[in-house]
Length: 299
Image 1: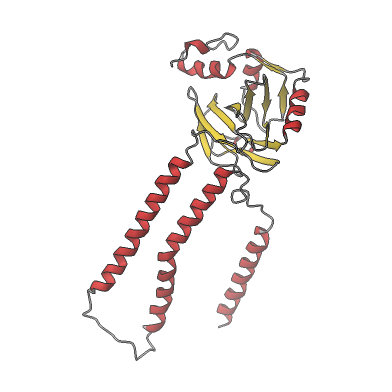
Image 2 (image 1 turned 180 degrees about the horizontal axis):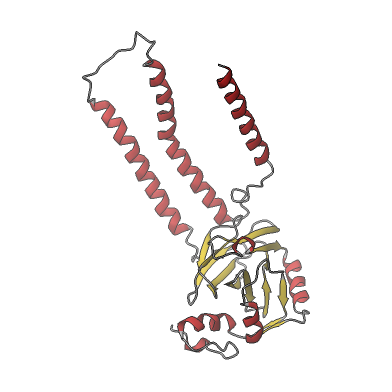
């Protein structure tokens, strides 16, 4: 008895420590600040509730049967020849089948509704901001083609304005995600993927890589700052005053592997740099990023 008591106390202490430490961790995934993230949380919640229709009765029946048919209960009926009951078979099969059908319908509908390639419309019909993201070893390069600037491990965009990401990689396969705003999408060399997000609240959100890509993977994070339109325009003016300029030679230096890269700003970007990065893998021998190879990209 003393041993069981000690084990019980130890288990309670472990549970208490876990619950206490869990309060120190901010659940950013479920603390959504955009419509995509909110709908994803709703999908997870609905799927969980549907599965609990099966899980909870099974747990209850497990303890009920164990208690009812315990060795000391002499009043329990013992039926060694029982093997079939139509009602039990109907319940056991009908309920899971219906849950699977509902889950399949729900998943199919939300998969199309939350397609990362699907543009997002804002309430005030604001024009989307395009950001070209390049996964490097081990840092993120962001190019604003319309504004003519670029950044390392940092992006800023206005609240309630759709953000259209064009994503590629000049490194091993990677994946970009801003958990509080929505889903992730892969970054692959020689290919372009897309991701559309929007923030309903201002704030500094954590962006990260979610596909292991080597020893610097853990530090491959960036800040995504959602601000007002005035603050965004002021930030653009600040970046345009930077002495750093992003041309092909500067990019080649950035593309070298480095860990825990600091935030950098570039006041200008060589035209079509994003397309030229992809062309390195699509057209062998075209490693000179100072030339414009965008027109040679297959349509």
